[in-house]
Length: 293
Image (cartoon, rainbow, N blue to C red; front, side):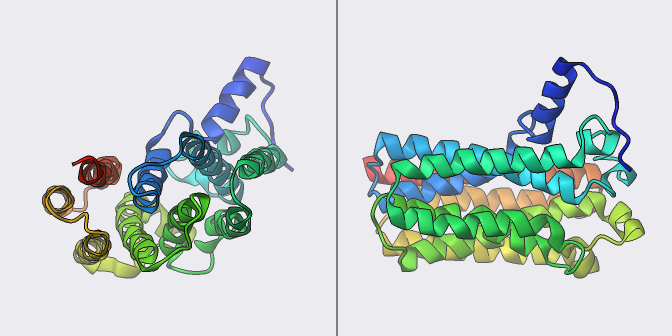
């Protein structure tokens, strides 16, 4: 039986705010920027403002929904992990069923946004919903939950294509798998932070799977990501000069991350994870400058 604290309505409202991670926008940023890459490229640098607004709200709602269902899935283990022991479900401020209701409410809000987009985008949204729902449970069955997160975080890329009336093409899928590789890389950095606790409670991750080769594999995934995204830029004639400059800046940043995290200090690895918010923005700036130059 759940133990729930007696709280005021302000405390409960604050708990919902924390449940959706609105106080930690890093996850939203990591989904937002790749969505903008796809939207700008698919629309040839001139996205419709309505679609831009709808896609932005969709990113915010679905990321929050993912956080709610993630905390529901982790409600019995978060209390045993130093970094997550103060989350609302772990402390008992809100019930597990409330997290499910928040998840469903945000999914409904996201579905309402689809009324403003083409029917094809509605069909693609089922993939996003499926991935957002199953990802939190994957860490119990596979060492590859980061791959499922990458698939979920990247799903907005083909959705952006369909939103502007384009069929997902080779460029779209290069961006998709490039973003997936990058996501696995930074979420493995995140997982290194919790590796000590995950081993104790039996939670699986790529950080555990990669073992002593974790930093090297992260670097390999980052290189694959740059290669795939660079190929997409080449196919769309947006590589020279600004696209390439952006990718070179990101490559330098990845090297810096590898240097900083080689000691596997959990706090430094968490810093590296958070530092990736700049990676997506830098790549977008390269795309944006290509289309206005």
